[in-house]
Amino acid sequence: MAEGDEADELFDAETARNPQPSYKMMRDLAPVVELPESAPFSGVVVAKHEDVTRVLRTPEVFSSGFDAVHIGQVRPLIPLQIDPPDHSRYRKLLDPLFAPRRIAALEDSIRALARDLVDAVVEDGGCDFNRAFAEPYPSTVFLQLLGLPVSRTDEFLELKDGIIRPDVAPEDRDAAVAATGQRIYAVLEEVIDARIAEPADDFISGFLTAEIDGEALTREDIVDIGFLFFLAGLDTVTASLDCMLAFLAQHPAHRQRIVDDPPSIPHAVEEMLRWETPVPGVVRLATEDTELSGCPVQKGQQVVALLASANTDEAEWDDADVVDFDREVNKHYTFGGGVHRCLGSHLARLELRVALEEWHARIPDYGLAPGAELIYDANLRQIEHLPLVW
Image (cartoon, rainbow, N blue to C red; front, side, top):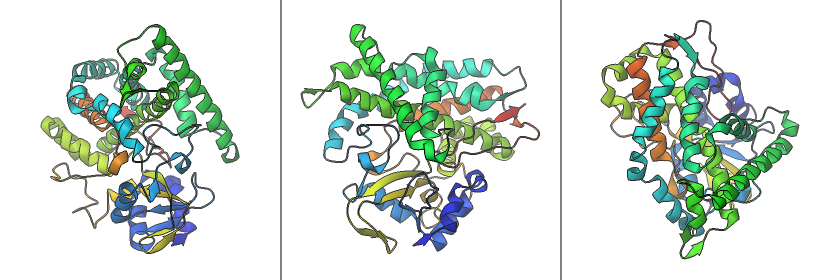
């Protein structure tokens, strides 16, 4: 097991910009690395596809429970932090909300929103893509689905960032995240009260009358589902869009491919999800002494499964370091794997496909603004500012 320098490299600015070489170095030299004290999590990080697969697919050994990671919650996030067998009870309720047929019915409204956002900037010759499109587009979609007021989007994005990327000193991080978590709980409680008084066509209204095996959801259940949805729905598609447009802005041949051949966009989405994995790693907690790649993992240790490294592992992928929009088989781990696989993957794919179709139909030729230096988040792969010109 390696430690120290190898682990520190995972969190520096250059690795954040171009992480794939570091992932390869880890897989080759140190597939299990002990995290440094400066890391946001303690424990070990695993880089090989086979190890990541084992972590994701054996929840009895690598738990996703409450103690795996604390992000401002005071109870387990549902269903993420509920392990089998109870996990399946909640998925029975939640999976149909994101079923392909139900998500497909949203396409017209999602496409209309994408067109409106492109219309707002197409004559300007440039924009900060993050602010103009990547944030408002998926945020509006998800807030409407969940039942939170779109008029408060800026407030909710600030709360989301207060959990995921708090702008405080490391020693103040835990307290700041906990305080932000309480603010999110207050928002959800407020909306539940409003939906009790006046139901609407949204998830929270539906949860108020939903049952699992004949039992109604408790108020705490609804809040704990909403807390997870709040964070996931306001961040990951934004991060994916930023990274995809940054990649296409800097790789004109790939960009021209989807301009000339729009039916290739779904394949392009999958390949850029593989290459630009927005959530590089997920955290689990070892429930027993075990080992990964021959290295000991102690009961109670956090284990970070590097999805982004698994997605570029030469042992699993042909031409792993080539971004190939014609890749025929693309079983990436960007949406996780096993029982905790992402609920919203169908919605994310729809949003990403429609965004690329509508943007490139109106703005096919663009690049980074002169002198732009992209700064990638060191923990989640996102770009805070993406200045584009056309």
